Length: 119
Image (cartoon, rainbow, N blue to C red):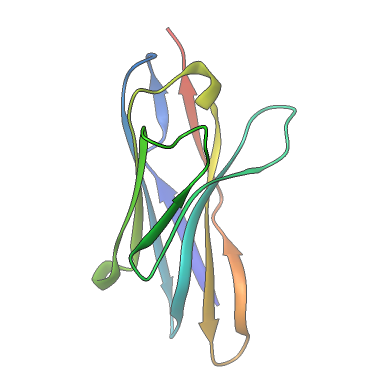
C-alpha cells in the first residue's frame, strides 16, 4: 500500500501563489508517475499536471502558470501555482501510479487539499 498526504492549500487572492506538496509513503513501492488533479464544486475531477521520468504534462488551463516537480529522494511531488485565478478554486488531489510487490501497479489518491482563490 502507498499513502499520499497533501499539504499547502489555503485561501489566496487572485494573482497570488501557493505551493502544494504530496508526500508518498509505504513499506516498499516504486513510483511510476505522480500527478495532480482537481475538482471544483459541481464539476468532475480534472487533470492538472503529471510528471514521470523528468517529463511533465499540463492541462491547457494551467500551462505557463503551474509547475509540477518531484523530489525522488523524499518521494514528494510539488505543485507550484502562480497567477492564481478564481477558476482555480477546487480541491486538489495528489495521484500516483505505483508498484508494490503485493498489489502490482495501481493508482493511489490523497485525501485532497482545498485551494480557494478569492478577494
